[in-house]
Amino acid sequence: MVGATAIAITRTRAKQQALLDAGAAHVIVSDEEDIVERVMALTGGQGARVVFDPVGGPSFEPLTQSMARGGILLEYGALSPEPTPFPLFTVLGKSLTLKGYLYSEIVSDPAALSRAKTFILQGLESGALRPIIARTFVLDDIQEAHRFLEANQQIGKVVVSV
Image (cartoon, rainbow, N blue to C red; front, side):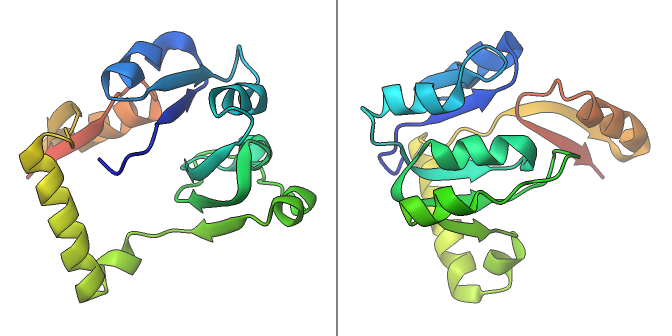
């Protein structure tokens, strides 16, 4: 929708096709491929301009190494239970911008929230954004919903109906 070429990363091949079906132009299977080598090959040696990372942990460093000079990394999660090392020399050498993100920075700012709503609604109306619902649970089954999430088998969002 914004003209980017999406490169998705997954640990195993199990989610590869689902990521391609969801719109990724390329999928890197990190248990089988070197992230930095693949991103550099896919970008003609330039690296990724923008990286969205919900994981942190040991994969943080190769993500920064795969970035373009002046790139921006948005960290919006901490799914890895392992420490996230700070790649000082890569950040300095490539003049990277690393930014933490919380949804509250959008929802607490009326102007930003309005822009976000407009962007999302236009994307939904045009079909450029297609939400993927992995599974729906009723509130009484919230424990099962958590077990489903913890199993890390979902593709898309989990909805809990009240």
